[in-house]
Length: 94
Image 1 (cartoon, rainbow, N blue to C red):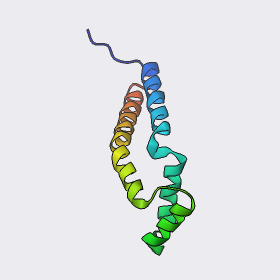
Image 2: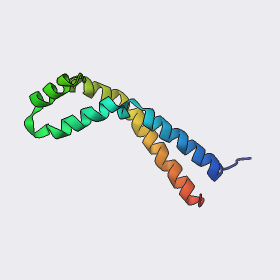
Image 3: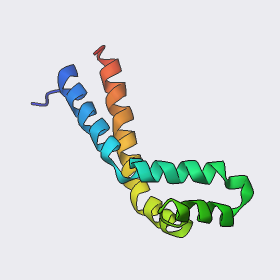
Image 4: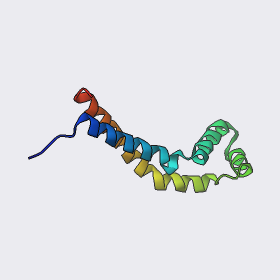
């Protein structure tokens, strides 16, 4: 009545989830650069970060916060799905 997914089916699902994660807005080059700039200039303060973002044509910290708030939930769901698939694959020895 119920069938379990094979290791190949699980690996296929995992590849799909990984592709979705890679294409997610949270992983765009701009988003990654914004995070890098924020970390790099954290000790110099918000004004320095805002200037660096503006100089590179990136969204402000406020706008970046909105983007993160909108996209983080879906990103976290994909990450959770990925971990579950990896665990299932490992448990069946695939």
